[in-house]
Amino acid sequence: MNPHRKFSAGLQSLPLVAILRGLSPAEALPVGQALVSTGWRLIEVPLNSPQPLDSIAAMADAFPDALIGAGTVLTPGEVRNVRAAGGQLIVSPNFNPAVVREAVRLGLVCLPGIMTASEAFCALEAGATGLKIFPAEMVTPAVVKALRAVLPTGTVVLPVGGITPVNMRPYLAAGANGFGIGSALYSPAATSAEVAERALNFIAAWARLRLA
Image (tube, rainbow, N blue to C red; front, side, top):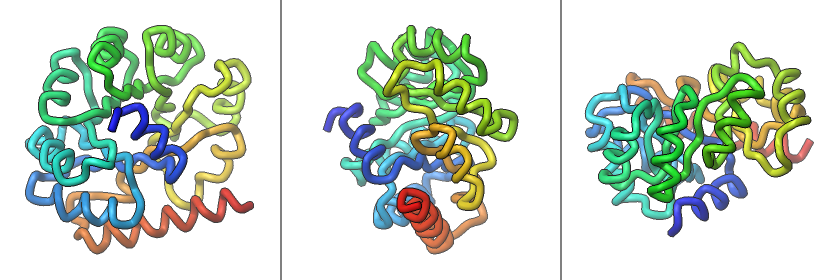
């Protein structure tokens, strides 16, 4: 399936991006299965994890309906490496126009990290698929609301950093479309069963918010 269609489908079903920082290739399939089996479809392995491209390749092959890719992507060369491994999602902590343009050229979903209106508009002009608001610990829901007021209608906004099942509500009320979930979902010491339990807790929290 086209990466952008996968992204749209993931946003519709469960707009939470799993951030698997520290994942090893040996964990990739059991942790990936724990997520996919519970309904997660958006998964990134940060490139500062052990052998991240091996993990991305394994999950992209095993879970073709999920959007698998990389986080902490900092250079155009890394974008190409991720695509060569089968990844279709490019996430960065910052906005680098060269990274965004390379992801666009290759037809990949690209979510650069931004904090300000200037970064947000530059990222969108470069072709970003959506915006990663990072770090969310420094960007309050009030800031997200202010950004939402000036961003083009339909811009995908995903706060990332310190997101837990209990602090999503104010960001959602401010206009967030979903979230990137890191250590509250996965840490290198967690078993696949623990990841599955945490994944279900986030799904339940999201369902409650949508019904509120």
